Amino acid sequence: MPADPDPAATAVPSAGTEEHPPTSYVLRVNGTDRPVSDAWIGESLLYVLRERLGLAGAKDGCSQGECGACNVQVDGRLVASCLVPAATAAGSEVRTVEGLATDGELSDVQRALAACGAVQCGFCIPGMAMTVHDLLEGNHAPTELETRQALCGNLCRCSGYRGVLDAVREVAAERAASATAASEAADAGDEARIPHQAAPGAGSVQIHPHDGGMA
Image 1 (cartoon, one colour):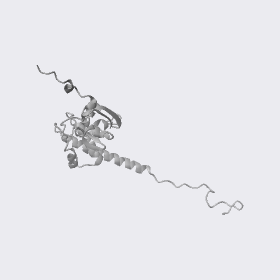
Image 2 (tube, helix red, strand yellow):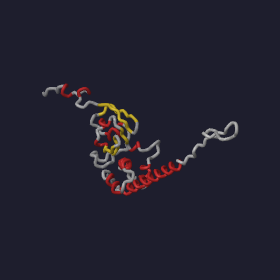
Image 3 (spheres, helix red, strand yellow):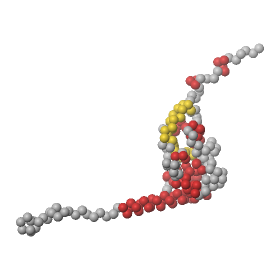
């Protein structure tokens, strides 16, 4: 009859003896500190955003950094969040597609993508929006070639690239027009000033108190 297995050999290791014990940290996402607790150190930023923080905008398209569906910004730099260990982003500024809108108002990029028909099945568009925002932050008037180069890491299963290119062109034109209008308004408000004239008797020439002559 075989001997009973050793209980010590089959026991589940306690948390203190695990090879990779759970960790806790704080992520600053879209301007808000979001605590993450009891997390595996190897969890990707994409996983933590979606599964722990409930920010499901970034999509898991390939888990290999090839499709761009999970793009976010970390300290202003566009990254594939599926390749970034979440714990390494602690202390950094993380911006997701949910953070592009302001007070519930869609950003100009988001509005243009919708108006130009770039939003089709919707799976890739959050990553597209992040890429376009990143592009226009560094290049206010990109050429179509520059836009294509920026988007080369974003795959669209619906082949909806034309709408994205049109959206970039529209946003760039609108921003340029707004900047011109603001500059013209500032110039119009800077009117020539009328020199202040001193009151009678305040200058160096005064009426003589006795003969009415000039001093």
